[in-house]
Length: 126
Image 1 (cartoon, rainbow, N blue to C red):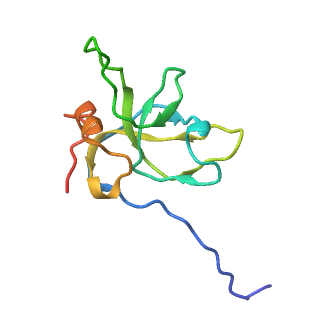
Image 2: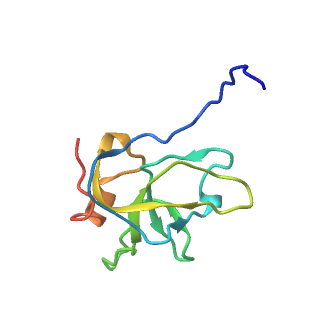
């Protein structure tokens, strides 16, 4: 029997929610487009994402308005619910929070456009 202590580093995602009251998650999670994120790094919990034209989720960017006043659609906006590592050649699957009370200062990529897109579902607290 080996009684030598073993040290294991456990990495845990940061807590970005005020509480769990009213939280809702996208059923089945979301597949991230790995080409839109940095290979080898982690997409942190609380990162703003939306569903791109090909059905894969990408980092949030505010929609642009053309000269006719039409604004690009942004479907499926939400916040990643846990950290996930981006590996070359593989699109990671991650949970997406679509309703709840996140802390804005602990989230990544949240803009006024994002807050408007999720208004009434994600209620940001300071």
